[in-house]
Length: 325
Ligand SMILES: NC(=O)c1ccc[n+]([C@@H]2O[C@H](COP(=O)([O-])OP(=O)(O)OC[C@H]3O[C@@H](n4cnc5c(N)ncnc54)[C@H](OP(=O)(O)O)[C@@H]3O)[C@@H](O)[C@H]2O)c1
View 1: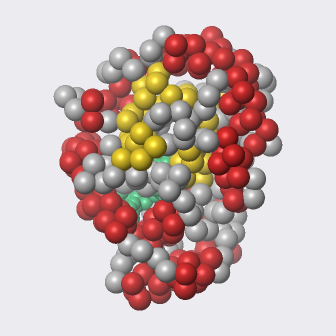
View 2: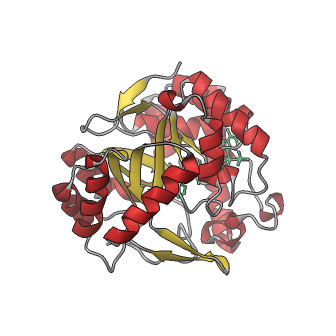
C-alpha cells in the first residue's frame, strides 16, 4: 500500500501520490467511463486515495464520475476539487474566472451535489480572480471550513504574494501548480514560499501532460479534439525541441529498467517529501505503472542527468490569461 503523508502543516493527510481524474472526462482524447471508474477503484485498492477533480472538467461531468466511483468508499478518499474557472456554455474553450464570495458559496453547493458527498477534503481556488481581492475569496472559503462543508483549503497557480495574503486570511494547506522535469519555474519563488509557510505542494501535470512518458511524439498520435493539439508546447519547432528532452528521459529509463513515466514521477518525488504529485490517467495499466514509480530511487548521477534534460519550449497554455503575478 502507498504511504499516507501530511500535506502542509494544517493536518491534511493524503497518499504519497494522487490520481488526477481530469483526463477521464476531457482534454486528452476519448474516455471510457467504465475503465475510468475501474481505475479510480483500483487506485483506492493500491492506497492512491488522493483524488483530484474540478467543477469545470467535463465541463461539469468529471465530479459526477468521481463521485459515483467512490460510492461506498468515501471514507478511504481524500477528495480534492476546485472552483472558479468558468466555462462559456457556447464555447467551452473560452475561460473566465470568478472568485467573488457569493460565487464561492454557489460553487461549493454545485460540487457537493455533483460529487454526492457532504464534505470536500481539499477545496482549491482554481485560478486567482484579478478582480476580487484574495482576502474576500479566501474569507468565503474559510467560512465553508467553519461550516464543515470543506476540510482544508488550497490555491492553484497563485503567485507568492497572493499565497501570503491568502494564508494570512485563512490557513492554506496546499498549492497546486504545474511542475515536472521540463517545467521547473516554481523552484525560483513558489516552492520556497510554500515551504516557508508550511503549505504542501501538489505538482500537476507531472508527466508533462503525457509528453514525458515518451508515448506522444507527434500530433498524429492525438485525437482530433485533444486539447494538446492546440497548445504551444506541442506545436512546430517547440515540439522538436521537446521531443529531444523526452529522448534524454527515455535513455535514463532504459538504464534503470523503468519506464519514462516512472522516471518523471521519481524525479518529482526526489525533490521533496512535501510534494504530492497527481499524475493523471484513465487506465488501470498506467495507474499501476505510475504507483510503482514510488519504488524507484534516483541517485545523484541520475538526478544530474535529468537536471540537464532541458526546459520545455512553449507556454503552458495557448491563452495564458489571467496569470497571477
Ligand atoms: N490546477 C490546474 O490548473 C490543473 C491543470 C492541469 C491538470 N490538473 C490536474 O492534474 C492532473 C494531472 O495532470 P494532467 O492529467 O494534465 O497531466 P499528466 O499527469 O502530466 O499526464 C496525463 C497524460 O499522461 C498519460 N499517462 C499517464 N500515465 C502514463 C503512463 N504510465 N504511460 C503513458 N502515458 C501515461 C495519460 O494518458 P491516458 O489519458 O491515456 O491515461 C494522460 O494523457 C489532472 O488530471 C488534473 O486533475 C490541474
